[in-house]
Structure formats: C-alpha cells, structure tokens
Length: 344
Image (cartoon, rainbow, N blue to C red; front, top):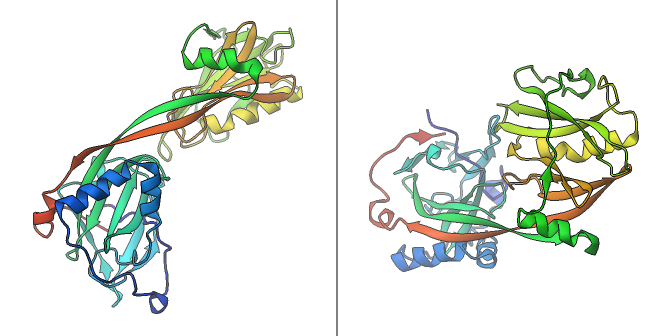
C-alpha cells in the first residue's frame, strides 16, 4: 500500500458550496517555456513567496476544472503532512505517483499554489518552503509527476549580540582558536534526576564528566555530558549537559543548573535529527554552542552562562542558495500514461 497523500497549503475540510469558481478559468498550455519559467522562480525567495500567495482556484488539486474536498489525516510518527482528497460526488481520489515514489525524496512540507491556471505543489525539506526539493503536478487522470528538482546550499551569517562577543563569534564562524571541553568517563553513575522520562538504558547514557567553570564565576563545577537517541518521530541523536553537585549524586541545587538545562532543551527535542552541541573555551571563558552543524529547525547559537542568566552571544542567520537541478519536460508529453504505486 502506498502512503496517504500529503497535505497541501490550502485549508482542509472547506464547504464546496462556498468555493468560488473564479480560479478555474482559462489555462495556459503546459509548455517547456512555462515550466522553465515556473521552476526558475522557485529558486528566488521573493518570487517563490509571490507564487505561493497565488491561491485562487488551488482547491482544484488535479487540474480537472473542479474543486476537490480535502481532509486531514494522520501523518504518523514522522509527522509528515497528510490529507485525503474527495471529488464532488464524495468518492475518494487516489493519487498515483508517476515515475517516482515518495521514498525518493525526504520532504516534510507541501504547499499548493496556482500558476497560469494550473495547480502545482512545492515540496520542501522542512515544513516551511525555504528548502525546496521538487515541484509536482497532478493531472486530471490523478497522476502526479515531478516537474523539476532543486538543490539547496546552506550558508550562515554570524551576528554578535554585543561588540564584546565579536571575537568569539568570528572564531566560531571560522572554526579557529577554540578549545572543546573534554569529557572523560570517571565512573560516575547518571543521577536519576537527570534521566529524561521514559528514557531506556539503550537510548540514554553518560559520555563523561569534567570540571568546568560553566558559569564563568571562577569556580569549576562538575558537569556531565549526556547522550540521548530515539527512533520516535523522525529520530534523534544529541548530546547535552547537566551541572551536578560536588559528589555527582544529584543536580546542582543552584538556579544556574535549572536555567542551563531549560536553555538546552530545544537542542535535544524528539525530532532533533543529529544535533551537535558542545561546550568550548575561548579566551578564558566557557561558551555553549547549540546545533553547531545547523542540521535541524532549532536555531544555531553560541551562548554564555553568566551566573543564573543565559546570554546569547552569537546567532547564525541561515542563508539558503537554491539552484534548479533538473526539469522533467518528459511529463509534458507522457503525463497521462504509465502507472506507479497508488497512495491514499
């Protein structure tokens, strides 16, 4: 069985009687210039946003000139967008993937839009349309084709929150002049208080401990580096840190321990992917870097703990360069032929 059809960008469960038919007028002929124009626009953020605002008539998912009804369905543990589609007579529409299968692409966002009288779908690597993967088109025969594919190059622009952090931000950006804190296994058992709820022994454990002046007050604390892995949702592999009391038996009683733990929480959430977090020293100060590789939706930051206060020293603004990888002009002449696995 195929996977349920993924959700689109229009509202689910609308009343057919209230749908305006103004968007189902004259269609431009699907030609190579039209497709190339569309796909080139996707590579430019401003043009892409303008396209996605074109929603008049988007309820016609299969370009047959009639609106369909959409209902949300479960996307499973992976939280993939999902919807079921129904024709005016109430019959469920089964979409057949033509020339590809859903496993060919890892996408978590699906956004419907109109262009020259046709409905298209932008499928993206994240819930937002900032990481385009491919554009698809569903024919009146309920065949879905890949129209074009994209590649995304990720860059970052580092911004210091204060001039006094300029040097450390530039050092992190250039990956120079920093010293990672080294954690060693010293036989300290993980205190029960720092174990996440429902974490099994196979998915959670200690990497090691180190004496670190984590709050830069001149007094080293006992810090434990922990790892957590999970197959739930999209999977997770991450490390994080806890400040312990001197004997390593429990959490440090001061407020700084709670603040530091809560600050890190977004960096080992259920859907954290492969999250790289670290403590490092730069010019005599200890800093925390969260999501160092920028692998997920969590922000990439460098922070410093000053007493019981977290200060974000550096933030990294993501810049995505999208390029057009390929245009599938073949679908213009073969879009109603062939067969692939139906998905519901």
